[in-house]
Image (cartoon, rainbow, N blue to C red):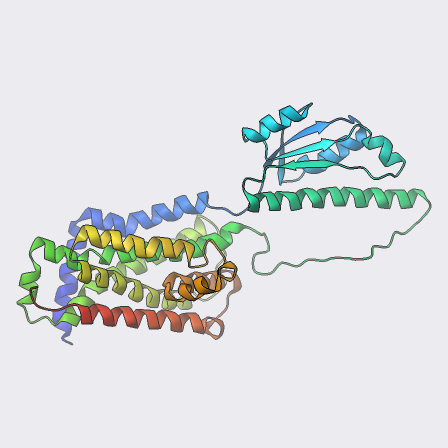
Length: 377
């Protein structure tokens, strides 16, 4: 390998990037915009659920139960209604996701220590969200019922009410239970896969379309030197993007970074080599910027979002799909970034992911070099 020839190709590609503000904007600005938009828009937290209440009892006991809902951060009271048609209308229009119906004899039955049915009506259009909301509602009602039971036993003269179970939960790695801490590290991997592959997918195809590939073919530059030379500038730009993303995660989203920064950039560098090589391979095969960009988007965006474990846990996928995810490099980096950010683990845990990324990078680089031929076709 001739370092001088490789440097000349890299310098040529650098000049093109800095002269073309659209390419520079795509490389630097767009990832930051995407990280900001998705970082604030995507959330798995279910808070401030709008609810409506039909309080048929209108007693201090019913108001106490309602206050348990409205006093939590999970529910927000939108209105009080007086009939089932009003409940149906509110849920149909999306005004409320949950309706609480307190029966007329609520207080009377409580005072006589009878079972009191309290109706909770849920909008089940989004099954996952509805399940979470139902869990919140059941927990509030059960806590209220438990408090009433303790109060009754104290009134009967018991000085101490033993509890059969004393659950003391302890949450590791994300103590505040903020979904943002889980989403942002994975989002960095997804954005980097899409943008970097898209950037290099235009490099070789651009040379063919502009007619400059004939000039490069006539030079002593070897095929692998041309491929590596075109990869180097975008590798550096990719590292700059990662630096900016880490800074934004730290100061804009306040994501804790508990692991090694050196390990983070080391594994990310391996990932960048593989994805950039994938983009160059696409560019070599298609020889058309339009086709290359479309193929790059198709082969990175959907797999990165759907098959990397970013949005859907891989363990919940069918077995055959789980095997396909091993071909998606974002799968490895999503787990690496989340583990480094939240758990602070090292190579003893992330070794398999690093090996997977290394194998993918070597395969893509080898295919790109073998597929590129210094001759006119």
